[in-house]
Length: 200
Image (cartoon, rainbow, N blue to C red; front, side, top):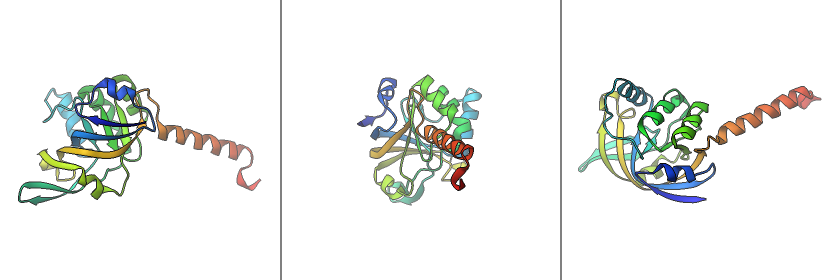
């Protein structure tokens, strides 16, 4: 199925999505990478508010290439970064913020899949190597926070239109496309080794 979602995204909308669905999104996208995730979790654990309420929004694992233009910040490239290294933070972020859609590349792990199931969220991938194309969907930089972390690690609050296509790889049932593929590969390898492998 194909969907167009607009922020704020409701839990009901997310729970309709299934692995393999393609979506495009309009509205607010918030970026966070490693240092940003770490700081966000520290804020939440200490009872401090994040600079933006993430409830119903999209969290994008991305560190932009930017320039300062006459009208302010401009995003030159907005390709995704690898999501697996953020696995240690994501379940807590989903639980504590109500973020509905996580976007990155390369998939995530079991803790994130369980959080998506429990709290009504999903994970989607954006094609790697298409950063300039992703930047074309950004209408404006609404705000940037935590610039002390550096431009790639800062929290960028972006308004997008037609951002995608994104493919759902973890849905709110807890199904995990990449996890299933890894499991199938491991099972095939096990059977191959037990039968003498390729050299039998």
